[in-house]
Amino acid sequence: MDKTFKEESTSVSRREFFKRTASVSAVAAASILAPGTLLADDPNIMHHTKWGTSLGDECNYNPYGLPSKYEHNVVRRTSALMSSAGDMHAAISMTPLHEQQGIITPSGLHFTRTHNGVAHIDPNKFRLMIHGLVEKPIVLTLEQLKRYPSETKILFLECPSNGAAEWKGPQFGSLQFVRGMMSCSEWTGVRLSVILEDLGLKPTAKWMLAEGSDGSEMSRTLPVEKVLDDCMLVYAQNGEALRDEQGYPVRLMAPGWEANLCVKWLKRLEFGDKPWYAKEETSKYTALTASGKAIQHFYALETNSVITSPCPEKPWTDLKVGDLVEIEGLAWSGHGTVRGVDLSFDGGKNWIEASLKGLVLPKAWTRFSYMYKYEGKPLLLQSRSYDDSDNVQPTVNQEKAVVGVEGVYHRNAIHTWAVDAKGEVTNVQIRS
Ligand SMILES: Nc1nc2c(c(=O)[nH]1)N[C@H]1C(S)=C(S)[C@@H](COP(=O)(O)O)O[C@H]1N2
Ligand SMILES: [Mo]
Image (cartoon, rainbow, N blue to C red):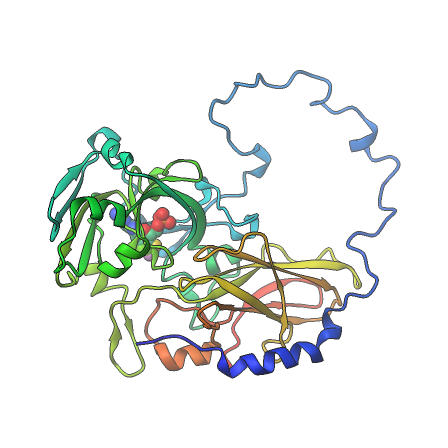
């Protein structure tokens, strides 16, 4: 089933609308910080500091650097609700998106989903079997895999059930739990097309099974077209080896597709002429639609977005009426490149365009920004992204009409933060 929401219906009115609402974005003389806030007797500037009057640590005190101890709250978090009855082996820990800067998630904060706990693999004992419909089946060591030319890409990774707990109505009062089952990293590895050219893929090969070596034996089937298009076997993340949590020493990367397909702790790739119908693509990761039929091979993640500032963890309670404040967020699409993001302050009645900032890359997080003059009145803040394949985020009701009410996967409906008159932010749902 084609679950895309084409833009035609909105694109004509959009341009017209921007003209009409231009005054909303025209920021009249206002400043971000009021001058004169310096206190003459501020001890932090009037007195010598401990760190300025003593020796610091030797530069090699910490051979592998860690964040400042004052950043101890910037951590992944788990919820018993998103585990197997509280068992953290089959559970998920979420990225603190409210603390995320730029588009690269620090490796130590990458969300982590395990079905049987985190495996710790001795790289010397790592073996990857590639067999089935290939001319030259092979068992590779890690060193052999690294002999192939490498490639590096910035890609987001998102669990298809990101936000799943939310879609029938708000469950969590924090951005981290509402959308934290996603991260974005720079990944390095080998393109599968390069390896397969070497091994010779038989023309009858139509599907690839990827199997993990952890206790869950996570296995998923992918169509060969995707495998040859852009799938990678990655061994590095953000300039260093993968973290154990992310599948050390090698995981599959299927850019823009369900993170569930990106099998970690990889041990076997088999090529065949039929899908495998593994447990993770029959009992789970399918979506029962309104018609009663299930979407089975559900792969690319939809165009999506979320406002990361303000959010419940980052309210506007310090602002005064007239202050200028940046609204920021993340947008992404598994279909390609984010083309733009609209913002609504009134729950989707009126929209204005935010600007994209920094790198705008396919299948990667894209940051959006808008300077807003704070009015101290209640808002229903929403973001709506659209991509270069003309997909637009649907409303909750539009999405429901297509995907139905049972499935928890691939929910990408427009999300709402309610900002009250004091600047507090809560998670609400607007369906229309
Ligand atoms: N071998 C193996 N691969 C796996 C899993 C697993 O439990 N075992 N979990 C999958 C799921 S459901 C997701 S969402 C992603 C999460 O990747 P991350 O933990 O690196 O964020 O890995 C996928 N690959
Ligand atoms: Mo997942």
